[in-house]
Structures are given as C-alpha cells and as structure tokens.
Image 1 (cartoon, one colour):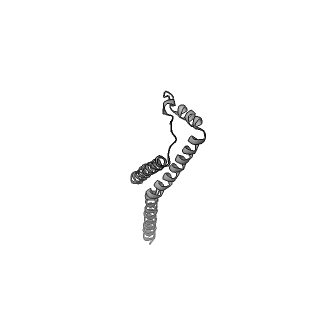
Image 2 (image 1 turned 180 degrees about the horizontal axis):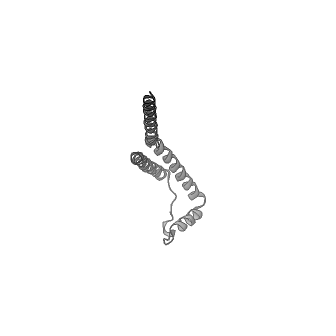
Image 3 (image 1 turned 120 degrees about the horizontal axis):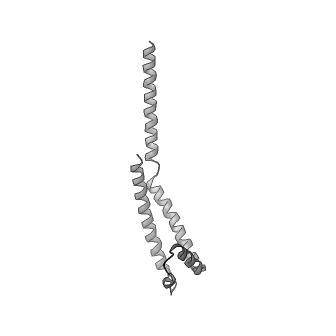
Amino acid sequence: MADLRISKLLLRCVRRGFAKRQELLKEVRDMLKPQAFASALTVAALGLYVVCRVVSLIAPDFLFAIGRSWFHTFSLDSMRAVAPMDIGTFLLGAVSIGVLVWVTAYATASLYNKWAK
C-alpha cells in the first residue's frame, strides 16, 4: 500500500515538473515578441532621429563636437552641409532608418527566441 502511494506521489511530482518545464519553455519562447520588439525599437530610433535633426538645426557645433569625440582620428569639418536639409531628404532618412531598424530588430528577436530554447 505504501509503495502505491509513493508511486502516485512520484508520478504527480513528475507530472508537475513536466508542466512547470512546459511553462518555462513557453516563457522562453515568448520572451521577446519579435513584432512588438521591432516596433518599439523603431519608435525609439525615429525619436532619436528627430532629436538629432533638431540638435543639428539649433546647435550644429555641439553635434560636430560629439561626432569628433566618437571618431578620434577623423576630421568631420569637411562633412558640414552647405545647404539645409529639405523635408524630402528628412522623410527619406526617417523611412529608411525606420525600415532598417525594424527589420534588424525583428530578425534579432526571432534569432534570440530560436537560440534561447
């Protein structure tokens, strides 16, 4: 009789462990939802794109000082624009960076979910 109870208890523990394992695997699979992750990262990148554009209009010297601090051996002075950016160029840049960030973030989240299993 005791052996039967122990067997039933062991069977319950194994089943619970299996169910818990399945829950954990589901959590890992759903850790990063690729579409949501890609969309969130794209919104953040486009926000930075707009902030960078505003800074370039208000304080271009500050923007170039930051650039010089990142690229130690390059002279960025020759890269200064002689004409202001028009709205078409701004929108093309926004669309292209949005698409690039979204595709890259989606691929990254998908690969992460695949390899995290």
